[in-house]
Image 1 (cartoon, rainbow, N blue to C red):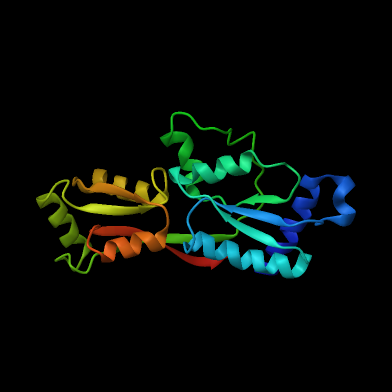
Image 2: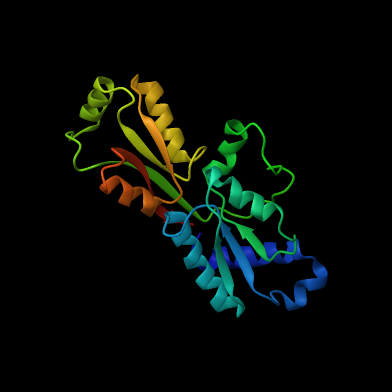
Length: 211
């Protein structure tokens, strides 16, 4: 789905969400896209591209509201408490589905408080290591981590419950080696932190398609 089709679908669903009484003048005020991760992340960039498209089409400002932290739960909770008038959207990621299994108690009901609209983009995770780390392959990284248990830290964009954190944790299980997770609120901060030698490796998000 290209940006124009996504825009048309979003408009039709937001009209339905806002109620028939508002259809003639929707949108009549600024709209908001809640992004549950920090500025500069792949999700944030896609949201800002869509916001520009909607702004041009609707003639109303579309604001990107970054609410990072707690694996996306802060942003999801912000959205859940918003007025259900069709003027607030949530950019949810895989962490939205993961959170129910990671967190004992959430301040919202993922099934009751949300209505799915459409898939906007897809991404993969790419393993990136600090250039100071003496490894040139995944095999060498695994060997080093096994030789130095709990001494290598990996960066997790989005915090606990993110796909980055899940990937690093699963690697601990599958590879029989241990590393320490360091949560970072957004991808750019994780990469600069990694360059500063605090983090040894990270699973960085790489968007490869916009629907």
